[in-house]
Image (cartoon, rainbow, N blue to C red):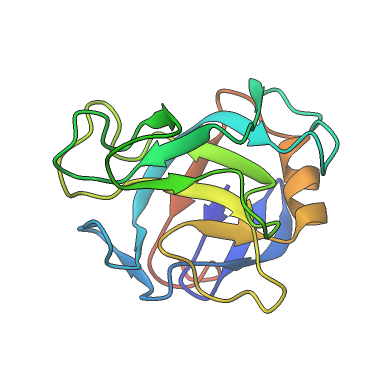
Length: 169
């Protein structure tokens, strides 16, 4: 699976519209820069809101999101770029949101083995806003497209975020 700087994601020969970081892409990701990290990332597991969406059919492990699920984005915290249980004292993202953006999340192995302070956290593939508004660094797709892609994913699937256009050599 490959996504380019124009927001074109290609998977199994099909092209999809995607949102990328509002600041574009960067080979040197830093916390809060709004850019998607250039590189190749393993898909770890899927989290989803069972109260809103059906369980995805996928070869990836799945977990149900609860109101107590969060993700630490505090660079100085020992849980940086890790899932956490809420309430949580350090800065974090709530995964149980009012909007549908995190109704389905694919977690990636970006900056997690080990997490390096300040090099970006919570880089996911998730549901796009209706206008495909730029993200804080994640890749976002229409819900139906995300489900279609998940059906072809397993633990060997990788996401390649690359500069340039997909049709370039």
